[in-house]
Length: 80
Image (cartoon, one colour):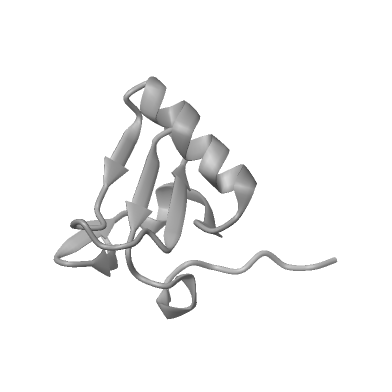
């Protein structure tokens, strides 16, 4: 099973990632806020500024301090 390193010794299964978005956007902030109310947020940023928000197929939101451009292992969608 391959795992995607999201920084500070944390890893996630890349096959379960629905989307990886920048944490600076207003929609991402609203999603994180709503997920916090449902206790569906995993904060893997270790107290650092959140840079990437991962949306998982289970509905959980994972926060990472690693920049979204630094991730490999997530397949890009084909533009048709």
